[in-house]
Length: 79
Image (cartoon, rainbow, N blue to C red; front, top):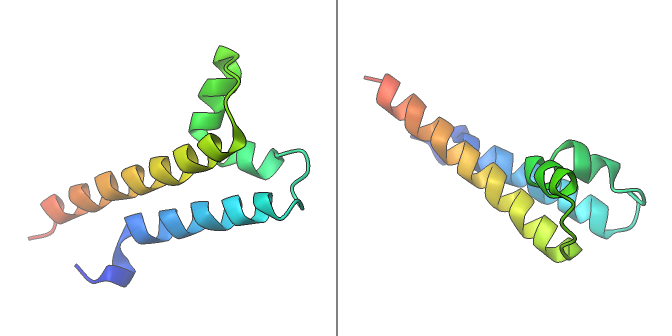
């Protein structure tokens, strides 16, 4: 599969863009990070207090993992 056609690449790039946007300080209330990060939802629901850097790593890792799963499913479907 062509690298540019992989979901893991595009979802990871999107997650990195959200993280960089948050790191610049423009997302001062962390709304974009919250709405695009399922790991953030879980930690907020559970009441966990973890450092922001860990949120960043979890967000990028989650989207890379989800993209990889989608890529594997597509690869199995394609003859």
